[in-house]
Amino acid sequence: MRTLKPHAALLASPGMGHLIPVVELGKRLAAHHGFDVTIFVVAPDSSIGESPVFSSASALNHLKLVLLPPVDISGLTDSTSSVVTQLVMMMREALPSLRTAISAMRARPATLVVDLFGTEALAVAEEFDMLKYVFITSTARFLAATIHLPTIDGKVEHEHRIMKRPLEIPGLEPVRFEDTLDLFLDQTDKSLYAEYTRIGREIPTADGILVNTWQDLEPSTLHALEDDKFLGRVTKAPVYPVGPLVRPVGPNSKSEVMNWLGMQPVESVIYVSFGSGGTLSAEQTTELAWGLELSQQRFVWVVRPPMDDDASGNFFNGSNGQDGTPNYLPGGFYTRTHDRGMVVPMWAPQTEILAHESVGGFVSHCGWNSTLESIVNGVPMVAWPLYAEQGMNAAMLVEKLGTAVRSRMRPAGGPIGREEIADMVRSVINSKGNGMRTRAKELQRGAAGAVLEGGSSHNSLTRVAKECEVKLHSLSARALG
Ligand code: UDP
Image (cartoon, rainbow, N blue to C red; front, side):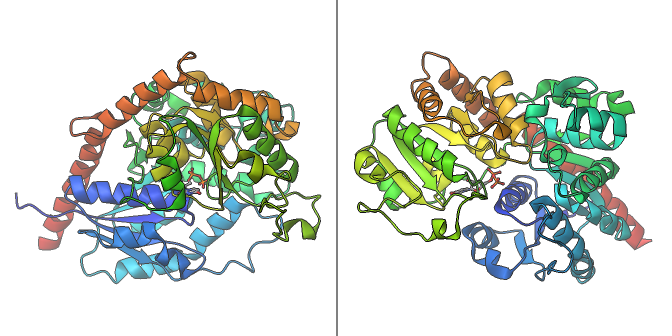
């Protein structure tokens, strides 16, 4: 049989949390499984094209990034629309340009891979007779909860959403209300639940579902998903754990924060960051500042101005106190902590920081990319979920994996107090005694093994590549008549 080079198109929805793992999947398919890859990127404007994630990937062999024309959803959403609803709208609006772009390709790909918010594009794959996959950039547990959604009736929804009873998922541990998905909490955006339910119906129509997890991380959930009886087997699509797909550490960064880390003892620094969008209230920001100070531990904190419904407009005027401390941090914070802490405004080189030997803990919102970046570096965490599926991720890290601590407080219950924050930070940095660091190192080894040749995730992608090859041959045979 003549060898044909498989070509896959990947569709990334807006936001770094999606683009990063989609690009990493593309790189893996190109570098290890012989694919040509075209990644279509949806974004509200063209600025994403300037990001290092975009430009560094564009320079690679067998990988091409194509920014689809920016989409305008200003007339389709209102002030109550959640971020997810806006993402879904953008993906919907981008469908015609995706169709045009695919049909204009001279060497048309035989496979389309979409992420969670791109499942409507599975229909485009069908139009072009392509194999179609969904790539879940989160956990298998999140996948299970999402494809379970369309099967629950109004009574079950009411019991979970209103009565706060756990959400039962056949074959899996229930989702506690305190850890539940945003779509059960948001009472203002009526379309959120409907959109997720639609996505939950569309995912199982794919030819396969790739998940950014690995066999040993979620064995029981993956086993349940494979079970012929899962949800009355709503999906025949095989589930392929292909992770961890994380952004590699960039070339030696000379930034101030990396220089500072270079002067700190091994595993002594706690890194504090809440992802690309996470924002705390003013009160919570103050408690966190005091908590870090009280803990007496070294820290790097990526600080954003707080958002607080009650704050006046002047709150964000960006003025600083006498020692340069922004007004939204306690007065004199810089002076009191400058010998052991560093504040980085807005954005930090996170993968580099987490890979640095001085970093010994991570206070994180538990976005799945951040969680994976912590795991691949063997760093234990303070789990501080804020939105989306982060509560489920936090529960898994604390209760299943034993690599994180978490506050007794839940998001709706008010701010986490400074003493508890200080305790959690200390317990993570001094975690030799409580086993969290040992567990984190074990997970790190498991993660590395999964993606090596012969590892479970590598084998999963080999199976996907095989399916694509078979499809390619059938298309080519048909073309030859
Ligand atoms: N990130 C970063 N610097 C920051 C904040 C975030 O490099 O200051 C990166 C982080 O390394 C991760 C991504 O942005 O790869 C955030 O994805 P995640 O899934 O953790 O959270 P999201 O932003 O989607 O909530």
